[in-house]
Length: 314
View 1 (cartoon, helix red, strand yellow):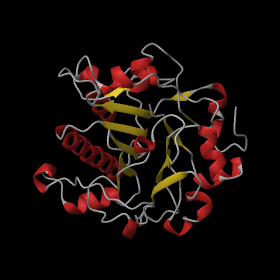
View 2: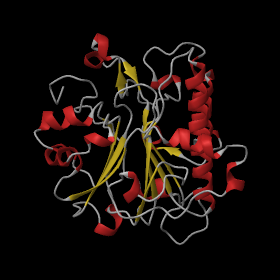
View 3: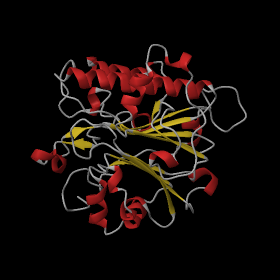
């Protein structure tokens, strides 16, 4: 068994400061694999106090885009070296890659903390009409780390957040998920088990939003995410919703300006998606998927804040 936690930290450095050290933050989450999003670290910020902790291996991706903003975006995956829940072979990856297009080069050359590169880049025929320039543009914002743990491939994702009238960023988000989908399909076709975790910035259904309007589910990104889920013909289980299909008020993101987290007035945009066969000797993925056979539960850790409050727990 392996325990995975995903957490939008809304700035890794202040989150570390709240706990006193990176090691204390990681230990408090009590997991084998910990995936952070929105670390807001530039490459110049990669000091030991935010990327090095005894007992953990770190894989970091920072924004490289020149969009005229300070540090934003960014993802980090921390893997426990000695696991309380699983063998070392499961927790530690055998390969890692920055981005998801296979174009960022070696991990060492691109400030990813680790020694391996995932040897499964997509061929040109797999990309269709997507150009190399588009791939690099999407990968440059530090929104993805892929780690191959042998038994499964893990995507740590921070999806773009966009305004309704920002046509440029809408196109960017469409491209982002189009490329991601192609990469998932590529790996699944190879027989890989794929885990997708992180802040996708998409609430898939009305039940996942506190104030969903009548046309909420018709938005194109929500339709796309639902199309990826098993109940809509896709390959993935939404781990939380599959375990808790009727639970309401289950939110992970809140309007910090009005203190909505205190009143649980938000949306569920952070997800764990799982696809692939189980470890049993069988031919039926329907009855023996890795989700059905090996996922015990999926819960929201409500005692950890997403906001900027100086308090760690609610």
